[in-house]
Length: 230
Image (cartoon, rainbow, N blue to C red; front, side, top):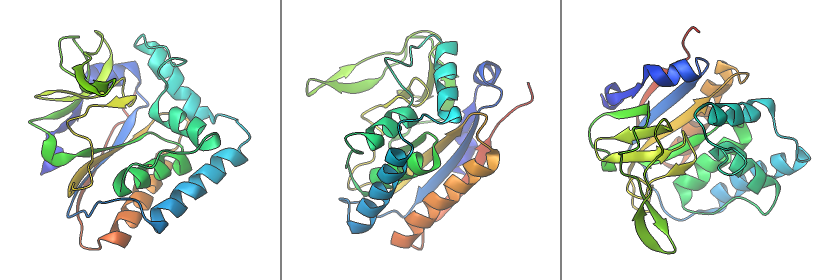
């Protein structure tokens, strides 16, 4: 079982006992460029954000509090959902590839961070931890590959090869990004209060429904980690 490899460290739950992540390990995917359907989903998400008149929902603000708790400045490095919400309400969401476009649309429509990684690119356990600062993080700067390690105490997703996503859900590494040829993925849908757990589960249902509309014979593992009692 793939999700037997996934864990949230106690020090992360201590930081935010209300944190929960819905993990979906999916195989049998067919990725590629965006199409008319994914474009329609992105358009719906953009319309919803613009219709909110620039108001940031309370459970999106909760991520600002979570970032401050481990020393990050959310005004400089916003959570993924806040960054997408602002892009959706302004210039529009990015168009990357079909899988990324679909999970970005779900993130905005359901107002929670959603990450998608190529499961085949992971090595060993998959864990949400507070960084030591010695971990590798591969990214791009000015068109060139660079390493940009996390700061000590930063909340990161990581495997045996390094950090796969910095600052909880701020930026993914290059190694595990979903490409046009990806056929397997790990989707991580994250929640903080006051977003109801039912809304987290509903976002997962919506994402799977869209994936199955394209490839009905998907193989899916699903598990939720957290929240914990304070």
